[in-house]
Image (cartoon, helix red, strand yellow):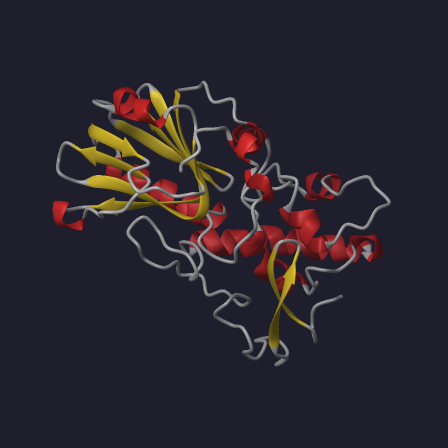
Length: 295
């Protein structure tokens, strides 16, 4: 059965990670722009939520109220909040994150039979959302979202903004004597909204650092390399319309070719020729080259 609780109550942050089908910064940014460019001004005819039961589809509040809240509203714009997609109407906000993938249906014949959120427009087009693995979907009065993940994403700099300086990045490293690995530093605690286990792989490969590297052993040069890789890799992923392991609003794969992903497993490293390997780590899979990534 679907759960109508907040994500904190559903413990979404404790769910297992996946290596694909999760909205991260490049995909949320790409899809938000596509929604604004293609759906702006469309009037919502009706909404259904939870049509296809999904054990790990989580909804804010009573999903039965979504139709009343959104019917007759028109799409104003969409923006990304880290890895989240925020779709604004005149009076409401639709929030999608984790595995909540939206797809634009331009003809009635394309309307899917299975979906967890569906907004039909009065011109016989629609926006359908399917859940991959697990996801959160919420509809809020505009400006009234108090979700902790949303607030955190809105309040923090992304690597695509001028405020994401090296000094800011360096300040994100936790003041602790305990072991903090490269993966834990970059992709946990919502330190950098939208940077998850998926984009992490190429960021660390470009920096020459293994996901399991103990950051207590890092030199200043390692932090500098990480900063450059975070900003440059994410910018390239966004500029090329997301990763080739993910898809956009129209179901097309992104143009960025991932160096480390399920697609490159057991293939030779493009930098040194070593074999790309995979290991289970911190609830998800990590990819690495033992020859050229610092462990």
